[in-house]
Image 1 (cartoon, rainbow, N blue to C red):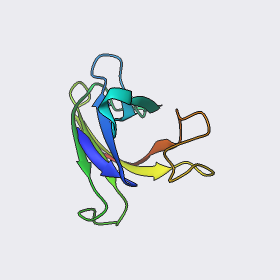
Image 2 (image 1 turned 30 degrees about the vertical axis):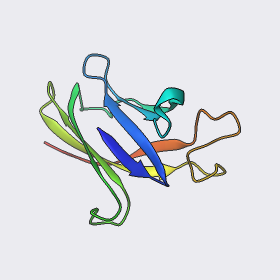
Image 3 (image 1 turned 45 degrees about the horizontal axis):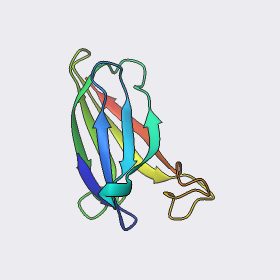
Length: 108
C-alpha cells in the first residue's frame, strides 16, 4: 500500500508470514530507504490486507494504517505518527528512521 505523509511517498508492506508492517520512503524510487518496522500486536497474526487512510480522510485527522490479519481474523488500526526530534518525523540524521505506527485498536 502506498500513501502520502509529510510530503513524502511511503510504502507500507504487511509481512504476512513473519508478522508486522515495514515502512519504506519511496519518494525517489531509485533511492528508496527503510524507515521502520512495527511488529504485530498481541492477538494480531498474519497481516494480509493493508489500507492507508490519509489525514484528509481520517476521522481523527491523523493518518491511519489498517491491517486485516488472516490467521487471527482481526483488524488492527494504527496511527501513523512521526517520532519526536526528526525532520517531519520521517528523516533522521542517518536517514533511516523517524516514523512509527502506534496501535490504536483491534477489532475481532
